[in-house]
Length: 118
Length: 334
Image (tube, rainbow over all chains, first blue to last red):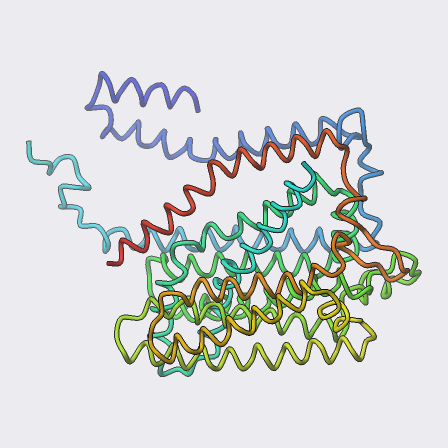
């Protein structure tokens, strides 16, 4: 992730022609999920790493949990919400991408460097 | 410092009810508009809530954080016994926000729009309903930590007729606020006439559901009348709210709309004062005769002083920008 960022910055300042090269764009494509993975992994490390404490050294997770029985249903509920939100975002992004040729004219100078008037 | 913290808690709840309420109300008013006038209403409503709709939930978050940090015992009680309505309200907020965004930004305008719109409507309706239900549960004494069965502890702590009535009252207040706030967004006489008609209708609903609240309170032995009318401040707040209602009616009649927003906001504050001041500083009245007080069930003094300073410094940053946001939006339209 950091590598691709550095390559990008180098390209911006010194090798402008790299920016339209296929290999760089493809690397960007494959690097897309890395940010999310890094975020989730960091979160998992902090949450799992501090068990059995919820506040390290002060309060244990067992003592912090709600006394209400049936809390697992809340868990299922929120899981369902997040799963459906992820499905929706995939669906919406697909629609957005499908509309790109219609919304943006590829010959428009704004969206294509090759057409830019010098 | 404790009073600074309580003041901020009160301010954020007021602002959430006024700004967030108008926001929810936009969906409710649209839902109860006939198909013919719907597009027009939608346009006007969108104009009127656009400046603040993203910022609204900040006030809810601030209120929750103040409760969480400053009054952990009160927070624990609420989140434990009112878990189910809180989760449902949260679901409403999420569903509403996402549906509203999709409705405006989805690249393709097709039948999915109908689904987004329906979700937006019903989430707008249910969220303030549960907000009212939760508010009612804190004062109706229905939360009883001494109960033994699951139903008594976690279901009937919020599900009762008084709660339903307050929920409906909150829903009509939101619709009322939204239609009053939208009055100044209208561009011609026809639109203005439409929105004034809506304001009258929602006003009637507020009065009907308000009566319902007192009726159910009476039937469930909640001394609401004594709370509101036993102390001079409560009576004064009620009188002020009624006078403001009269002034709004007069302003609408004369088509002089400059003060209506401020008056409606003032009215809501007065209703909140009348409803909460009487048992102040007790914020939650429990079913077993105990109560949770903002002055007694409070975090350590160090925490409160840190929280107070954080709120004061934070408001230095937030409030000017909020006003700037609103000002820049109202200039944009002219």
